[in-house]
Length: 109
Image (cartoon, rainbow, N blue to C red; front, side):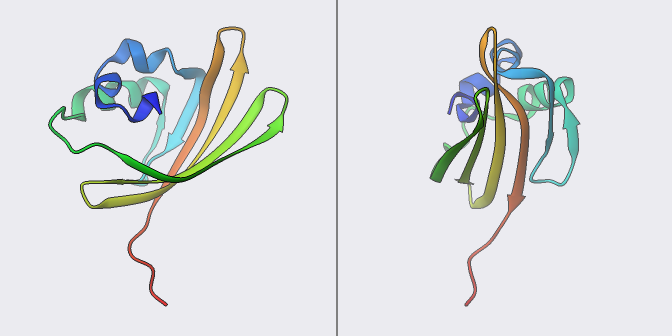
């Protein structure tokens, strides 16, 4: 949840402390980014006046003793995304290893 906090996202040091050295992601924009690129982008683009990120449908599944798969949905300023993250336990604690976001709109029946 800390990585969704605007104050944390604006701080390269705080974000770096939560990301695994081999972290990479596929963002909602479709871009692929590594650890350094994501840290820099968050610090540059996070607006402290933005509305908060709202989460729902959060679910975690332990895949191995040191690996958890977390899925959840987010909504912020009208943008919605399904999210999937892999968290690895390291000597320093749990770190985000991989993240993917897929934008979605209203369901149509």
